Length: 327
Ligand code: SF4
Ligand code: MG
Image 1 (cartoon, helix red, strand yellow):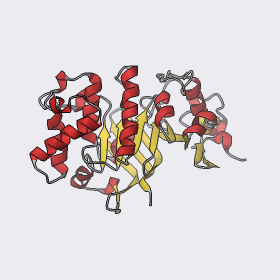
Image 2 (image 1 turned 45 degrees about the horizontal axis):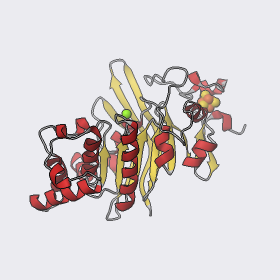
Image 3 (image 1 turned 180 degrees about the horizontal axis):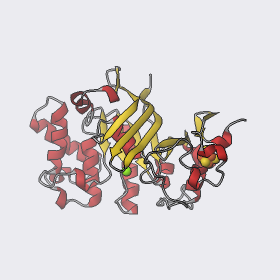
Image 4 (image 1 turned 30 degrees about the vertical axis):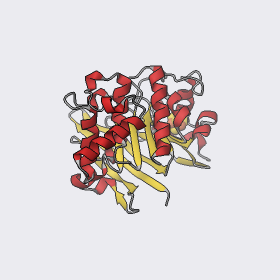
């Protein structure tokens, strides 16, 4: 009963002229109360599509083929996010589930002040007056550590630095005290100092607001510093999941191992994830077999023919790889 989100068997495809793109296949993920879960992988691995699917943001030619995304609401009822009507999912989005997008600037309207953005989100979901909403906006700007919030609340995006804009986006996201905050690459376009500050801020807010955090990132430094548990995604599938220490100290999937080798010291420095050899998988008209096989140093005959099995190593450590299958 302390589970906030349970995604099972999620498959999302895009029907394009070039073919069917298997963006996400049989993916799963759990989020418990007040924990930070990281969904990690290279660009194009399907992690953004995954979160868009569970928040009702997949548009044609995209289609959710299979799956469930059970979400426990504040009142304790459980809903399947994939089965809700557009109105129902809109009521949850920005309210019980909030989403911070990759690029802070693009999610702020240049014609609206910081206060307008926050107040609009509040008024969309709660029956309070405009004045009260703007008062809450000032308090929220204070919570995200913006100096002089009474002044800043009247600022337009162009009057704010990149870091401050991202703080406004975060303030807007938490305005209705979400149970789950999804942050998609929240620090990607910020410089290293600001990145660290934003991560600190997210950690602090998570405690203060008693939220769960789902962090989408390709940055293992971010993962090491923030996450409790990690899901590694490759080619639209979950390759491995475990608690953060196990992922860094005893990774079992060859892809996770290569990812970690590509980062000099993820526990000490925030580093950008360098590419590992080989090209990212082509997700068009995928054949059965392990999507990592073309790049995997351990690939065997069977890896190219059959989907890797799910191997449960205990303590929440699960790997999808033929290497670990008992035969
Ligand atoms: Fe490598 Fe085979 Fe494991 Fe895939 S299933 S990661 S190709 S060993
Ligand atoms: Mg993305």
